[in-house]
Structure formats: structure tokens, C-alpha cells
Length: 596
Image 1: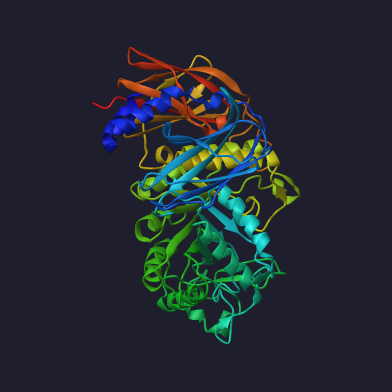
Image 2: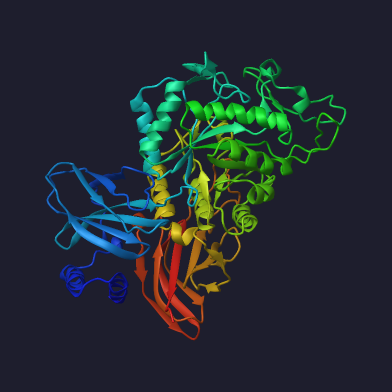
């Protein structure tokens, strides 16, 4: 009860209110998530938005599989492992229960909402949903995508957005929605055309694009307009683009740089110099037309990585990486929206992080960074580039070779990669109408097994609920962790459990990622053959620390629907000993220290 007293005093709670809190705590047996049975009574729970501003009210809808089942519904709101509020939900015997909650007014907070179905002292079922209260989506980006914009019914769009909302996605990239790269929005008589072909000659409907943006806004999700920083169609000169603005593979301007595409597509992409003021003004003016007719929230700016040696029309060498920041600075002046820029294989990321007005850092990972360890290295590097200020989103395509033909995503490969990215303090763009396996987002050769879909919901809830200990001013620390039961390593080693130690404000976080049964250590699991880890139970851990421990708790997206549970511990001789109940893919152990 120590925390209740501290919190009550800090908030100026009256003696009567404090007595009520204490009575409520002692009048009922505490609900422990690990004791809940899987009664298949709670079907699913949703909220009306993916992100909430401070002061917003959260509206919940819970669907039960058996609405008439006798029992009590209890909802509990938690920040990290601490219960903020608990109450019984009113039921009317139907399969749907609706209620609201207004969280504390603190900005940039993650919460877990736990729902329990009880019969007396027995907990028959348990469901969770995470909540993000943040005034700016760029602090904790959970990026998704859309890639299909053909004419469709609103109900089809709604189903896609509802799914992204359940994954807590708070920003969405509109991939290849545009007509031409140098003229993204097709206009007829000064107004948007009803439809147009995009670069792969797929139909794009204006109503679909606009309808998607409107639906995303209803869920407080951001809509990002995708386009290259230097791309134009081969016929761009007809539209006023000048060859003199281009970049070339030779100083004699005989060979303009281009990105070849399939013959069946509308055009190859011709490359232009971002430092050329006339090209910059042309493209920014084209983008400004987009924002005048469509309520996008920002521009997702793409590039194509290291293009090697390049020259401008005058035969002068062009350092492409150094052109991006100044271009985006000018774009921001002309179009005051959110900006995100892709760093392909980390190309130019150091310049983007320090000179471009971006919401967060975005890295498309390729063969130069093939291992799980490389993913963490990119996230660490981006934090250094941005002096700890900007989050990282990883674009990493899973089961890449396997996606050459139809099949299913391999769950172990997907979950291990998400565990590494999330534990390292990043997030991953993966979810849209489907899940990304290729850099060409419309590829849908691989389907998501139903069980994996449910597992990923818990992983994204976990990323959201624990964002304050995963990627909120969290720093790397050296912490010696040993075990007599499993082989641990401070590196990502095949056949071992990888331990990543972080620290923040009087607590240490220890992430344990289970590579004990891994058949390889490549994050993209390109042939979809990564093995499922064997469940490990009752693992003894010893952590060397000289600080006085107040409490220890753990959370995992693999069990208890991601709920935090308190762990017993012993502290003696500069070490803390505890027992980890279960380890499948990823556990997070949090050690909280006494504040002097």
C-alpha cells in the first residue's frame, strides 16, 4: 500500500477519499493476471481512437462471446505496473458493453486497460487494450501504410482503418497514391480528377484517398503523403521540368541518373538535383497543390539510397546526402506540415537527423545490416545522431524470398524481429491492408495466420502501454545479469538469450530475447525458416546492483495479454535474485529502486 499513500499525498487526496481507496483495496481479493483462465468469454475490445490528447475521454467497446453469461466484469487502468483506478462495469445481458474513462492529464503516457470476467473469486477470462495519451504522434510513432486506392465502398475502407486502429497505429503512409512523381495530384480544370493511374498503372480514386484521410482523422491518426524528393517521369519536360535540373552519372551529363522500373509500368524514374533551386521550387509547388486539395498531415519523403558518384548539369559533383536537409527546410517554410524522410540503408541519416525538420527517423534496412544486432545498432545510432530526441521507425521486409510466391508469414521470424526492434527502443512499419514483405508495398503474396494476427495485437499493445520505459528518454546501461538455468549473452548470439539493459529515473529495464533455438540470426528471415523458441519456465536470474531495490515486476507480450506482474525477489551482497516465470520470445524485467 506504500504507493497508494504516496500518490494520495502527492495529489492532495482527502482523508475520506483515501479511506475509500483503502477500503476498496482490502474489500476484494486482488486480481492477478497470471491467475486468469482462458474462458473464451471476452471476444475483443476496442477504443474509438489510436491516440488521445491530454484531457480526452476514451470510449471503449467490449464484445462478449456470451453476453448472458453470469459473472462480474472488472476494468482496471494501469500505468506501467501501478493501478490507477479499478471499477466494475455495468452489464445489460447483451454481447456489447460500452463505457468511458478520462485518464490523468499528463502528456506522453502509455496505459494498459485490463478487463477481467469474474465469477466470485475465480477469474474466468482476461482481455487488454493499450492507450496512448500524447499530444504529438511523432514522440511515439506507430507507423502503418496504405497501398490500395481503387474505387471501393466506405465499409471496405472502414474495415482497414478499424484494424489499424486496433493495432494502435497512429500514422499512416499513403504509398504510391500519386499520379506522377513530379505532379502527384492530377487536376482537371483546376480541380482534382476523379481518378488516375499511378506509376504501376493501378487505378487511384480521389474519393478513396480523401475517404481514407477522413477516416484516419476520426481515429486521431495522421495521414502522410508519400513522394520522392528527386523523382520525375520520363515525360517530365512536357510538364515544365528542365533537364538542366537533373543529376547525372558522368560529369559530361551524357547519362541522367534513373531508377529503372518494369516495362509495363508508366515510366522509369528520372533523377533531379535536390540542391537545384528550380527543381526544389517546382516539386514543392506540386506538393503544395496536394495539400490544397487533400487534408494530408504531412509528407513522407523518399529517396533511393547511395547512388554513387553524381554530377549536376554544370559538371559539378553533387553530394546527395547533404542536399536533403536544406531541401526539407525550404519545404517546411512553404508547406508547414509534418515531415518524415526515409534513410535507405542509413544513407544520409546523420544529415537528416541534424538538419531536416522531421518528426522521427525512418530507416529502410537492407543487406548492409542483416542481423538482429544490426537492428539495435541502427536504433542506437539514430539516437546518437539526434542527441536522444528522435524516435526510430524501421522499415524491414520480412520473409522476403518466401514472398516471391504465395504462402504465410512465419510467426517466429516476425515476432523475434519485433521483439528486437521494440526492446531496442524503436518501432516498425509493417501493417497496412496486409503486412510488408517487400519494398513494393502492394505485394500481398503472404497472408497473416490468425494466431499471428492476435499475437501482433498484443505486441503493439505492449509497445504502446510501456512506451515510457521502452523509448522515453531511456538510456543504455551495463548491468551484469547471470542465470544458472539458461545461457545469457549481452550480444545477439545464436543459441543464447540476449539481454539488453536500459535505465531511466530510478529503474533498470532488462530485456530478455530468446534465441536459444534460433536457426539463424538474420532479422528478415528471408526464407521463413526461423524456429519457434522453446518455452522456458521458472528461470533464476541474478542481477548485480548496489542500489536498494524497492520492487521488481515483469511484463511480456507473450503471456497474460501483456499485463505487468510483480515478482518476489531477494537482495543480498550487491545482487538481486528473482525467478522469471516464463520466457517465450521476449520478457521485460523492471527493477525499481528506493528513492533517497
